[in-house]
Amino acid sequence: MLSNLQPQKADKIIQLIQMYKDDPRENKIDLGVGMYRNADGVTPVMKAVKTAERMLWESESTKSYTGMAGEPAYLEAMTSLVLGNSIGNDRVAAAHTPGGTGAVRQSLELVRLAERNASVWISAPSWPNHRSIVTYLGMPAKEYRYFDYETRGVDFHGMMASLADAEAGDAVVLHGCCHNPTGANLDLAQWGELSDLVLKKGLIPIVDIAYQGFGEGLDEDAAPVRLMASKIPEMLVAASCSKNFGIYRERTGLLIAVAPDSATKALAQGTLVFLNRQNYSFPPDHGARLVSMILGDPSLKTEWMEELKAMRESMRNLRVSLSTALRDITGSDRFAFIGAHRGMFSLLGATTEQVEAMRDKYGIYMVSDSRINVAGLSEKSVPIVARAIADAGV
Ligand code: LMR
Image (cartoon, rainbow, N blue to C red; front, side, top):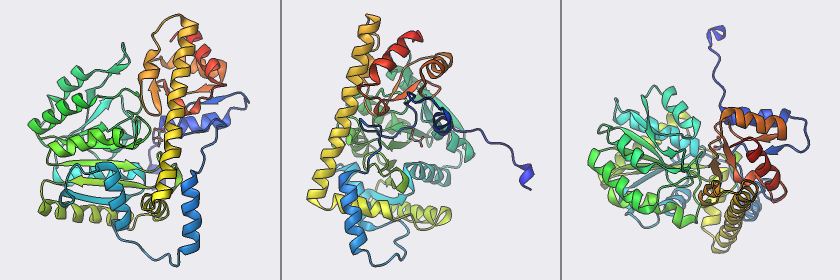
């Protein structure tokens, strides 16, 4: 039986982690997988998380099962972090999922249950796992134009033109903020126009907001999702605590289903519970409990928000440093987009050969589509990376 298996295509981001590990060069630079790193190259446990872990260790008296949709305190704290007061609670169903990827997977399964023939529209380019999961689930994947390789900004006109071809009931995977891999984002007015199109065509948005807090701020990054929720009757939101709480390995995510009314909310909530039960039964608890402790304690919440702000500012400073260094080397402003992009990533627009040349000559690791993780830079490595980008002829 096992010999009948077909070799699976490796995920290019996960493959890169191993390639970087296997490279013996001491001066290698990791701009690959999307994890925050501080100036020492370390992905730290955030202070508020450490404190909450200590408190939890002292107070936890049982490891009995939690709720099938997760702990109510977590669901409440996280839906409020994402949706704010944009819509009433009577429209919001939610379930804790293992990581943001779990939420994306469950959201697609939910769409498939409700709309058998739905196609799923994915931005070109997108996080590779979006398409991979859609295809694995046997759903038709379609692409909408998103990135303008000339300006390295959003091709909004192209995006709207592509989505004009979508059919009622099709799902559209959107990046709520900090687009992965490009770093180029719609402005709020464009989100308004997009919401009108989604409404007019009867599409189902699946908004992936894995990087909330890494762009402009927690509320600012959630503004598009909140706007959309206030304008359209139904949408799905996949949130993650991996990045903004730095609890990557705890697999802490959330799937929100925004329903048009309370009766449909109950139906959606029952389906979220069903999907959890089918796929892994009770969701993991540790990360979610830390998050609800932090969000429920004003002083821990303040400490967390301050540390998150420092992380966000450090990424923005590194963006400015890199685009300035590139301006100095190339004598042109063509890399100003790096300073204008938001979130953890920027797509440089380099060819695969240029990416390979930077890896071979300088030991710089970025995804083959030329996505860099800005948080993998440091003030020390910026001049080296800038020189490599210019040398490669990007
Ligand atoms: C990334 O895009 O690098 C992260 O979301 C990590 C992952 O799972 O791919």
